[in-house]
Length: 269
Ligand SMILES: O=C(O)CCC(=O)C(=O)O
Ligand SMILES: [Fe+2]
Picture 1 (tube, rainbow, N blue to C red):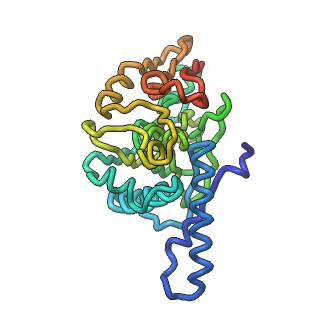
Picture 2: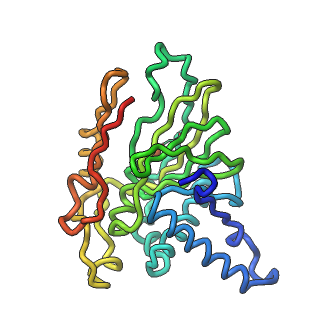
Picture 3: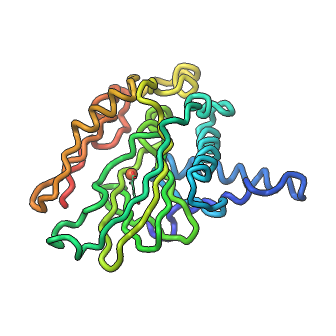
């Protein structure tokens, strides 16, 4: 994927006032947004949104996440509001502010990663606000690709839970942050989470109801999180290899999931 075709999705059709003229045009533009979100989620699992209403508060992230959840719902062709009903308890959502120190703050520059090791987000999706320093990268076809930097944009990452609910239609994206050289980097992540006791399995609307085989067996989210923690072996030793275990693919994929990616990436840091 070349830098210029990183999916950048303009949400302005969702902020026009109904009745303010050209409603038909706005409806078409909304459909086009949903089509492009589907394209981004079925391939890279990551995209940028622009022209949303921008603030840095928890409430703002919650509102934006609710809109994104609706768009993901529609992009999967689900009955209206189904993802919202599945995930109506918002108590697990969380917002984290990060500071990544520039590389020459650490003892050796051989340690490339000091902030975020390669990982997939264990949630429905994450919204990410980053500054202009850069360093966020995602994995596609075994290549690390920098996420395009655009002022006033938010990154949307598909997470593991959405990959399973969608029966592998949407891909959870592997990403990392490479520590900056010149300046410290600041970012803010909002995770659209589910509770630990929530049951996760491919949605019947995308399996039994359309006579498609489920590609994952069901699991309790808390059990999945435990396996995930046990499988993470990050290290600050530059000679070590960090092994990223894809818990979803390794523990829950059913033999029908022929199109699942490789289960383990060996990543040199
Ligand atoms: O700081 C970033 O850009 C990435 C943070 C991240 O990957 C996460 O919170 O899951
Ligand atoms: Fe992440």
